[in-house]
Length: 125
Image (tube, rainbow, N blue to C red; front, side, top):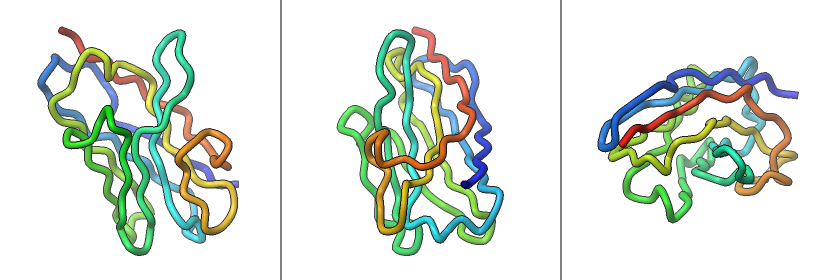
C-alpha cells in the first residue's frame, strides 16, 4: 500500500489561490494515475481531478474545470493541485488518492486503493 502525505492547505479569501502537494513514499508509480478528492462537512467525498502519471493526461470535475490544475513531478514522486479563483464552496478536506490496481484512474472512491491523511482548505467570502 502506498503512503501519501499531503501539504499546502490553509485559509484563503475567495478569489485567492493555494497549491496542494502530495508526496508518495515510494516509487508508487507502478500507479498508473493519481487523483485528488475532497469532502465538505456533511457531504460525500467527491472527485476533483486526476492525472495519468506517464502521459500527463488530466481529467477534472466540472465544478473545478478552468480553475484547478493537477500536475506531477516524476522525479519527486509528487502530484500537485493548483487551485485558483477559489470559492467558498471549495471549502473541504482535500485528499490525495492512489488507484486500486493497475491501469486504473482514481475518479471515484471505489477506484481508490490508498488515501492520504487529508489537508483542510477553507475559503472565506
